[in-house]
Length: 106
Image 1 (cartoon, one colour):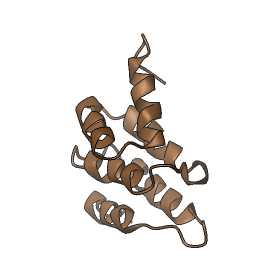
Image 2 (spheres, one colour; image 1 turned 45 degrees about the vertical axis):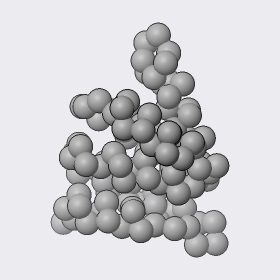
Image 3 (tube, one colour; image 1 turned 60 degrees about the vertical axis):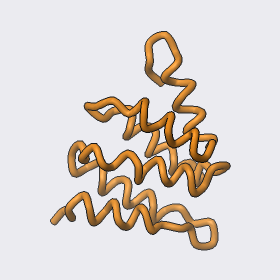
Image 4 (cartoon, one colour; image 1 turned 90 degrees about the vertical axis):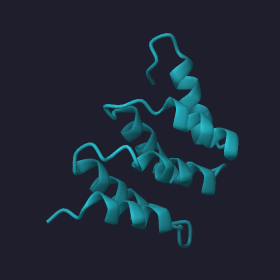
């Protein structure tokens, strides 16, 4: 049985890698994305991961956040810009550059 999105998001918000192991976050993201498009309230939590780990890619796991957000059926640009303004992060910078491309995609 799939957990409600708010439970998965709570666990994502509390995530911290142990011994540089990002796999638990990867599992949480798989759980989040397989439940269908999550509610708009997901954005601050996911961008919050970037803010907590501004110079990380999470051993590649944070790319799951990038790709998942880019496939959401709603706009995320304003919240991404606000996140980057609060705490500049490598992943948010990558997403902003991808948005600036002429086709607006990554």
